[in-house]
Image (cartoon, rainbow over all chains, first blue to last red; front, side, top):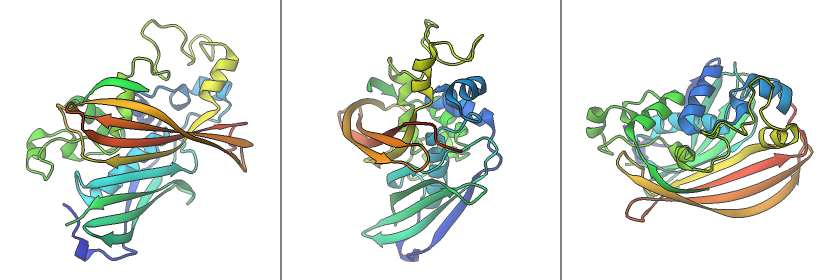
Length: 135
Length: 163
């Protein structure tokens, strides 16, 4: 499961499709699990008429959570030591997201990854980093 | 945010993993998890955010008393317009960072304390002036040991971000 440091090279990449055609129901599931019930994520009437956005949109933390799945699938369970992101664009229902980790450094049993998630138009929605223990 | 007790529970982890589309059995199957390196079900990397469930004053959850919720019912919002615009429209999550000292597992009872961090302003391209504010949350376990350090950055915009 875990990565072997000696097999890793700077510039290696790992990509996963996080979601195809993101559904509003998934936003409801994330609201329920995380406890963040901000109506801009689940309440189309409120979001259009009061907030003025074209539709509900994903919690940034849902995108971070889905991107984290790509990272843990790559580095193995319980191996993550740091994970941080900037939310660069909003994610909307219907979006298809792909996330890529790129090896930036391997040192002292730690791999440093650059992390990027993009939508179907190739626009960045999340940009960040992660570090993990490797064998 | 201050959370006195954030009990890490297996069914909460299972629901959270489902909501992020993560089918990894380490998040729901105890027997499988026993044979993995962590040796137990663990929380997914962003699970600490779900501590909001255990914050009695969390403002983005309808109160059990039923009053004062900004979401729609008979009307598009349940509260006065200017307040709801401020709560729903202007504030967005800009950054989130986690440092893991270990990964929590069912049975842990964490507590969380949050301190305000830096604040700064920036001129945005699509939304006027941007007001950033940072907060740092320390999650400690039942022994008082640091489990996760989280740093969040929120941003308020002068006007809506153009799609």
